[in-house]
Image 1 (cartoon, protein in one colour):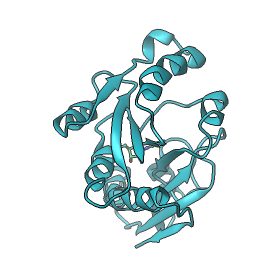
Image 2 (cartoon, rainbow, N blue to C red; image 1 turned 30 degrees about the horizontal axis):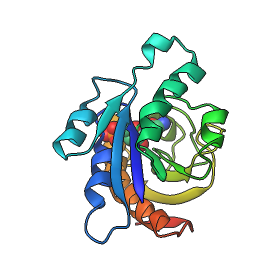
Image 3 (spheres, rainbow, N blue to C red; image 1 turned 90 degrees about the vertical axis):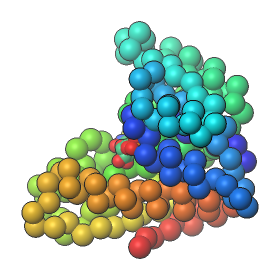
Image 4 (cartoon, helix red, strand yellow; image 1 turned 45 degrees about the horizontal axis):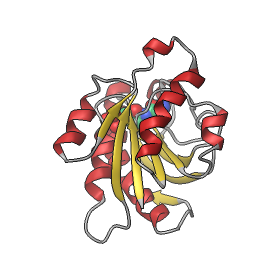
Length: 195
Ligand code: GAR
């Protein structure tokens, strides 16, 4: 099974996914693709011998369909069976998703359906939540929606800041996403719960 990973930034989840696809794992990374040519994750992927590509979204000036058409060129050339969004910070349109329905996964830093969108950790702290976490889900046209394939929980500490909570959740992201990817690659889409 061939896996393309889409990133926008540092790519720590991409690294966790890529490094998990070894040995008897049924999948291998075929491409790391970014909407930001300067994304640090592209270097980390290249260091691992993974093919990389970037399609800068900025020249498209909000024309999402045109951006996605350009994105589809290197993506389809890599012939992925699965597409993992890993800190990919562009909203994808319904036609792009529908053409790949069931084959796109995403990791989101909240316990969905809570806190779709941005600033998830600040919102969890402001709400006084006792626990936070992350979710891996199948991507559907609705933002941060779609069947949840796995969740990991962490406690919220009384003195947590959004940054300290994000760091604690990120540790669990790096465990959850590879675990869910492996299950999906093996044909198991029943929800996983960590720890
Ligand atoms: C991760 O925390 C991921 O859950 C989040 O961005 C970060 C990317 O870090 N994704 C979203 O907020 C998606 N809406 P990384 O580049 O080090 O993997």
